[in-house]
Image (tube, rainbow, N blue to C red; front, side):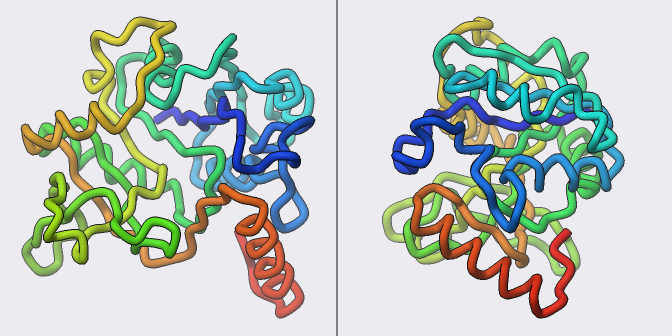
Length: 246
């Protein structure tokens, strides 16, 4: 299985920190945020990873290079203008050789083990689903969540995801920005078309084509300077306490 890290965003909410540095290169716990993802992917047995970029993308390539220092082969998908999530994935689609693939948002920090993506792939193929999403409890900045998980039999790790109604938001979960996708989800999107991911997921949900897994571990949407500072403080405390962070 191959993987993609989304790193093309401008990081407007992070300004002025992102005026001269792309958000994935902001330091978290002593290393660039994107390096956490790369190290976890390598530990999970991934070898080929593609990174899309737009804003200050040359900086990302200069810092990460070909990926040998991480035990990876890094590839890049430069975008003149950020194509949004689905557009960026569609542009890189040939890289995945028509097989299911893992995508990770470059601006999240999460202790989920990417090795689980291979089990997700098997479940997607068995169920005929187009997407499998990592779901987390709703954070304070997103209290309404994204999607509604349906109840499942005891002992089953995955669950179908559906659109929430206004009166069911208390039972929703938030999409963590980590998912495994079938290439068919992105069929029909031109290679340089701006296209968000959410409409594709909503459409697939109407056909019971999206399933989820709940993550009970650590996850942070590192979207603002305040959240970046809070995460750095917490990771520093954990490191001094002797906890292993990877």
